[in-house]
Length: 308
Image (cartoon, rainbow, N blue to C red):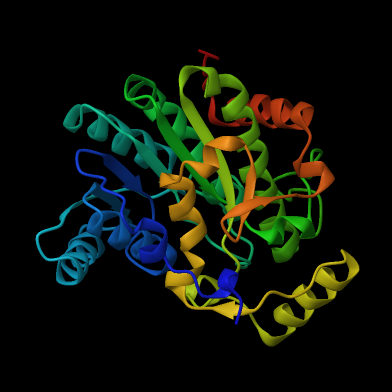
């Protein structure tokens, strides 16, 4: 098996001391987020995770402390599908912390049946993109004050299934496709990263978008056999190979690499896979579309965020 499919989070962090660093990981009670939080905490970081409830947050911290005795872990409750919840969490975080070195925007949903967020947005676009759009922007003052700092947005090769559906991102007039909606949200994660880097890279706040590979987590719990067939068909049409299934410690290695490595700083604003720089689709690699998405997102959430 190649190194790409065997290198783990602990391998990435070997010899790295994150003492004194504050890291926020969204959606870290399971899967890639939990593994990233564990590994970063084991390297000495103060790690704050988000959870959708108090019970899940407490259980998540207890599990992390079992894995890393003596680690510095805490949690906050945040529901990405509610902008009120996102804003409340961000305000509380700023009140309780004087720095933020890394924001790992890991939380997300995948290929779920049609639904809407509390604010009326299509569920995947609203959760995977707009929730993090508001969170990151509300925490940017802290990230700028802590520079050099990093923002890591979890995307996916699933973005190849769809660009932004500019005339109907919330599927109000189009027939809903769970894969198109997922692809759109993952394209949004990449375009968001591009515009973040353009706006704030010169201030020492750098951003990356990450494809973790196909990982054994419960993210795909809404997937059916037909959905996997659809995904394979779409991958074939786009010229991609279906990736090999890997364990979570391997899958999380690229996002952890983006959080800590000096090599990632060679190309900030990039799309990453297998701990190196990768090439996204043309529509996810267009700086003008990144600006357009930012403007649309500001209009949707009812807030304007400055460039510096």
